[in-house]
Length: 189
Image (cartoon, rainbow, N blue to C red; front, side, top):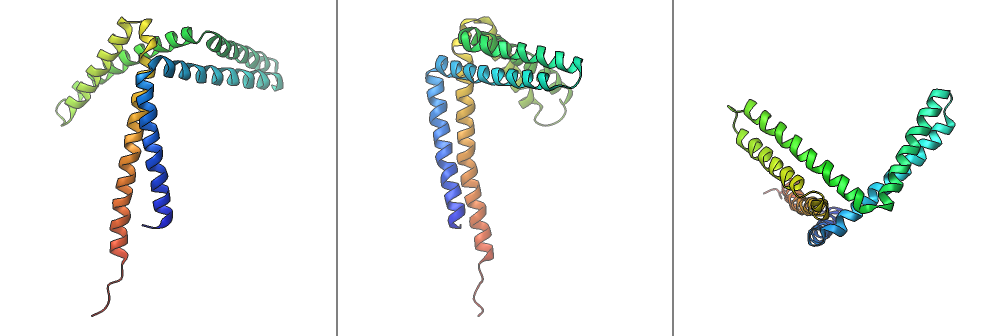
């Protein structure tokens, strides 16, 4: 493996470890992690709203101007509301998350039965049932689930991404070793 490949592999390994640690911290402090996600969403909404207002002011026709201004102002106000009341934003985000899991789970269950003769359909069914259970759990504890659901799910996502990066580094090393061993020139006998 070249020095460049080793350096990139080292960076990915450290990034993977950092993501695993951050995911673990997010799971241990889910309310703080969830609030951080809500603040980021609030900032994105505010920035999108300001951009929409600017686009509306610069629009050529009256209808484009009005629509751009209305959508921009509403989006900016949503961002301000989320930033001013992050717990409300967290509760709303959690409610949307519960709805997503319920719909996603129901769709996976229905689709799994359509693939029933194929191998692996049980995994799709299992995934759908897990999504349904998670959605029901979040829904049944709402609004209190807002204090843990978003942070735990973000933490699990960070951890799984970190593990995937670590696995990718080891896989890339194996490939580089195989390619390197095939490219070696054997001395003539």
